[in-house]
Length: 224
Image 1 (cartoon, rainbow, N blue to C red):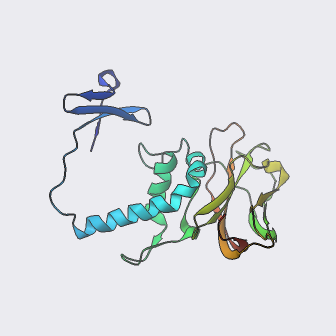
Image 2: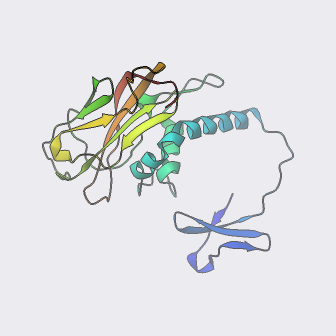
Image 3: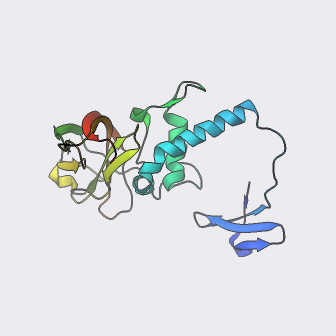
């Protein structure tokens, strides 16, 4: 593990047995890696498996969660992807090893204090489009130019479609296309897409929590 240090003592690179770097702009230093000789204990293996599951679940959403958790330190020195993973590990896992699962309804893909809208919904508009709706009545902390953040995630096949800068809050609705869905003369599979909606501030200074809005099945090509 590294140790955070005062900025005036910061350095990058290697000096003797020390390695200097930074995390989120904060300098830290750590010693050289020592190869482990003892086998991992059962609890460690379980934690490694859980971390691996969280990484695989979030990887297709990398660009989205970087914005969704941007600037919001869910845990100290943790934002963006790392914060999203921390939240997932703490809140979205169900069951016990070796039967651990991630519940998409408990996952957050955005985390922040920008106010949400009322009556947020998602519906399957047709065979290749999702429609998101929300009340566009403004309350304290809202701006008509806040933008909708839309996500549809096929967890099983690790395919995600999203917009981080979608329509303005004042519109009250947005359409998200599922590319390739319903194409004729193609071998199609039933893919379940989990839907999330959040909002990004007009000045990009913050974002809202995400809200899980259910899942919908689309017939998509076997290989997208």
